Length: 116
Length: 111
Image (cartoon, rainbow over all chains, first blue to last red; front, side, top):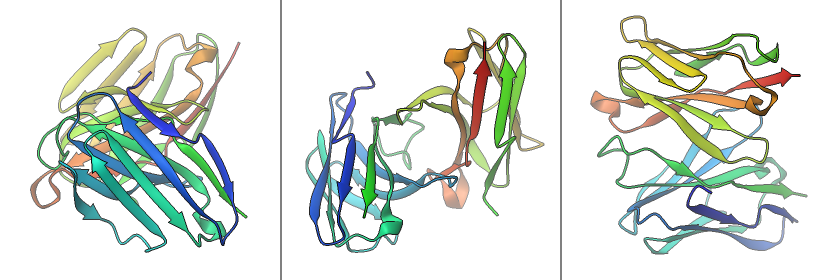
């Protein structure tokens, strides 16, 4: 149990569907992150929220839309995805934004997304 | 070319056989992390180090800042150690706070 919970664990969706990934952290952390992990590639940072404000958006296509309603919850809304978006999407949190401190990241178990 | 390179990409070992995973990086860093990712996908942090050596049970991590190189050793690995091991570095200076990840090393330990 890492203190970061992601749902669902697996998701299969068509290119015209709209779905959302959910992340919840019970660690009292102030920063939350979305990462994409594709096969044989390094983790790619997608979005960073610090104190509920988006502080980083790494040139992610607009078909991915993040939402952070409070410091414990983070969503990734998906619409009109492409097959190449199939990947493992990992949520992480840290006490403070890693740009400001060496706070370790705590990862969830990820959502395995398949776009058909 | 990725800022963090790991070798080998895949590693198979017999239970009890000493193994080493290597990580080289090309940017200035403030810290280096070794992470473990289990087949289910979850990632846990094993070590964070900025100099010298750290030991936790059967795992040992070393770093040589001058050579921009780190190694993760597992003494007497067990099948439950089978996982992907990921090296990540935290940049400093103009890249302060940015994390660069390696592609990971898939370790399989046979009984």
